[in-house]
Length: 197
Ligand code: SF4
Ligand SMILES: [Zn+2]
Image 1 (cartoon, helix red, strand yellow):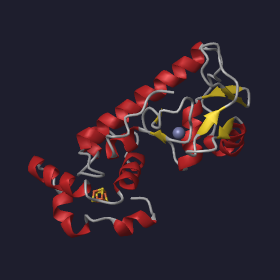
Image 2 (cartoon, protein in one colour):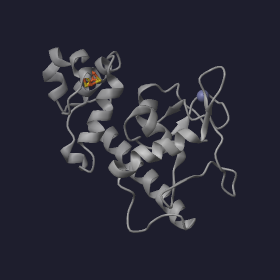
Image 3 (tube, protein in one colour):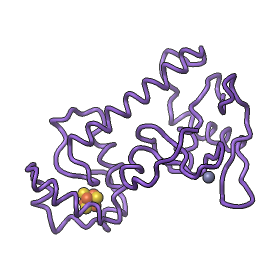
Image 4 (cartoon, helix red, strand yellow):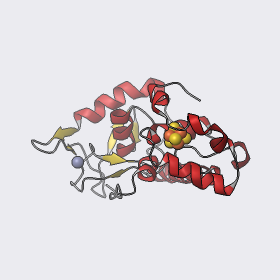
């Protein structure tokens, strides 16, 4: 498990046996505990990051209120979303087919480029896209000779981590990039239904 202050607030340590069990009835009881846990989102993000790329058999126990099967399904959804985004970019002839940009190198400048293309609204703390649009009138963030998925960059910049699955706006304000949720956040709070931007 990765480090982080959130672990000190986890409420599962007294139930270690339950969380170490792979029985269906124990999954249910553990999930009920997770649903009351104040650090569920951070826990689920950590689990998804730790288990990234591993198959179903390598995932164990309930974490962040999701069973191994549910986390594996979320991981597969992540992969499909990433593949779709990459295909769309390649189709538009905008992607470097030799591989994605290195986040470590690209991130600071990319975040700055994104910030320059959004404007904060006077009320509500929305960050509305004011940058260029593509032919389909969708926000188009170009940086370092490539086009980048705007909501992914926005999410990474604002939340300090990679999103899982599709990123959607949650506030309903047209082209707002301040209020976003990924699949992990929607799993945590189903009221964050949102709409594609
Ligand atoms: S969400 Fe569940 S597994 Fe994660 S820290 Fe909380 S109780 Fe433990
Ligand atoms: Zn908003």
